[in-house]
Length: 350
Image 1: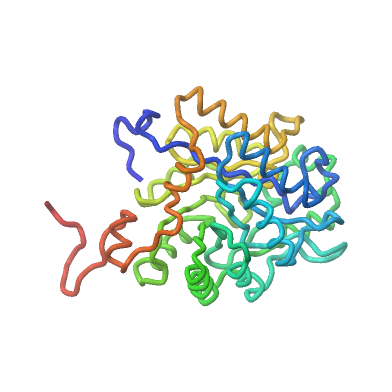
Image 2: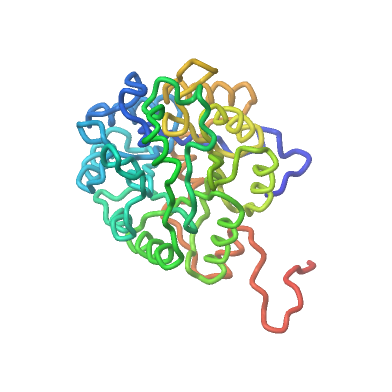
């Protein structure tokens, strides 16, 4: 992305899209009972509260009544149906892991099988987006967790912390290509959750080879443990490599969330918050998902950055948009064109 002299002027930036992730699949309800919704009614109300606070994208996981993360498509269908009525304008974004929480004591924290995750393309009613991982990758969510972060939570149990430390994300090239095909066939937009520049480069190759021909909505996931850490050096290099035609959201973990989001707001990028990313506001003080959204809205106001309403968020994400061919996609996304046979370079002078 390019930053000219006036790039930090808020009146020249797109309205801020806030993604809420209030369903925290890695936490048990007792970790933050004031904020972790369990019943279907509570999960629907959580979406309403986040939307009213200023979030226009809802990142969705589902819980069973026993508090465990649901792996049943019927539960996702039920929640999506109720959300379409309760928050009809909100962008509904289903988490591509479905639920990575362990099934029980001694079980592994793991993403579901390739076939199970393909079922997300068949949800009814369909979501607006499904997040997609690129390239099989370590996802050790414990690496950046401090003793303060996990104090008083289920993560203090060594066996649970160990299984989350050993978690990996399965996302091989055959599965990615098939999943993108199925999502497009059903009119669902992928939202790319990327751990590093290597994964961003793979997405670019998917476009250049015609495997994916649509808008690029990307989240840089700076959670460490096989993903980038929340270093500003990592962040700025990733931002530099993202084409101007993409929408970029920044995501981090625990008390890194607020400073990363503050930088995103100032630079004209987009934000994500909620109890899936952090339980904390200031050190030692928990913050609900709605409180985190309210804080970002307040910070945006202080900086003069408008917060996107639902229509503005949908317009920026270009939902239901697909491109005709590779050349069209590359041009619209801001990538250089593919090299033509016999061409020595791809840069052209007017």
